Image 1 (cartoon, rainbow, N blue to C red):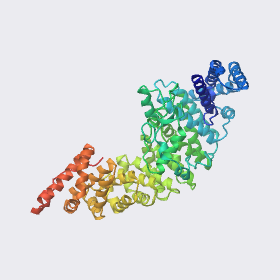
Image 2 (image 1 turned 90 degrees about the vertical axis):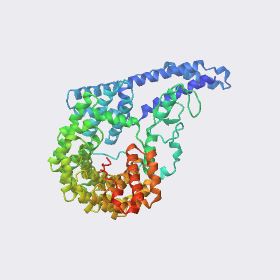
Image 3 (image 1 turned 120 degrees about the vertical axis):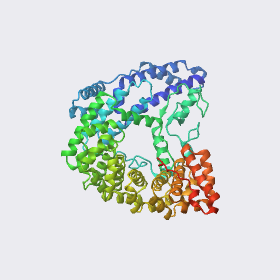
Image 4 (image 1 turned 180 degrees about the vertical axis):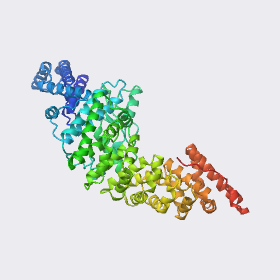
Length: 605
């Protein structure tokens, strides 16, 4: 009896999951093209229900005759039930496949045919279309993990179909999310997050916060890597309940993952992206995924650039936003848009009086600046002065932040480091962001400054702009580990030169550095602290070493780093210890110079 009821429960659970998939408002296209498979699944499940009810020993159950009659009725209906694809669905499916064939031939489909497909699917807005794109992209990420990757090309083609529709059919971007419990960025309200128990975010197996939560057939959720390890060890039970599993399918819990990610962000808890996302980034960077996707992206790029160059202001704004989305992770999309000559009109849009248009154009240029061929095009079209103008006078903080990020990527070219440093507003603009910007803007400013410092002439420029005091204030006020680490990296670079070392010492930085070395849990931060102290000793040892010797906690931190740090940080800690020991041994003779070995300081990178 128990086995029969358990089998029924499992079958109904599968029916429930299948119905949930069919009812998803972001998987309409996928359900359409898989309608044959879906109908087959329903037929199989109905037959399974009929068989399970047929073998169920009702005679042994103390239930009313009406219940037994109902069970028999359901059994008969399950046997007779037929599931076939409707004619309208078949017609729409053929139309989709025909449009994909057109893409493969480089032919732009007629808008009326695209509209008929979307009308059949009930997709009536940009946001609904974008939901379909996001779902298909997540499916591509899952498919990439499989050995065969059978559906990769087809999924890529369907994604291209929806992206083409999103870019060409909808004149404006509507509000994608209007839910009461979610904010405009698709997250949850802070009030809701406060009420949550963070222990619920931990995997029952590893007890660590989940980065890729998946749900098994019992309804319990685990981190993907942990439950896979459990299964590979020969276990076929639920780790939490001990219940034997008939099926070991894993269902990604995307809602929980978004919730965990936002919770970690708001509470400054590091969130390591799952291997799925990392592999998806690699996949999306490598190529289009199919011939149809490749050709469709070329058509989309041409369409968007045409709107940028000759469209109305609203069309230009929308095109800039689409380019921003398309170039976020895909190197292939970046190459298509660069080939379509998207950079010059995007640069022109930086002069827009519309804050949203300027911000989206700047974000798109930031994404494109990561592509090697884009850098020269941006500079040759007067982009550096325009970026510096946005950095200083951007209409939104986000636009200024994106401008700093774009300058960082351009500064990877040696010649451009020199040019950027000589533009009058470049370094002052970065200082302003570092002083008054939000954390993300500060981060962009720091890494850009670090890139500019690879050109020696920029050292005195940032010192003259008051960078050291800004960094000291940031070290004392910021609670973000990444900002502290980046600030230390910049200080360590400045300390390589005498004028930088003297400015750092004059700012009273030593006690702060020693405190961070003792208290920080970041290996990188500790390494930069040691590199900084070593550089200060080498460049201005007469002032620095006596102060370091007087601090007893420093030696404890240095010896700890020798045993627990990286090989590089261990070597530098050893060098610093030798300098301090030499000073103690020889200070009585009054010869400070002999206490300091002549070492060549190597840049921390």
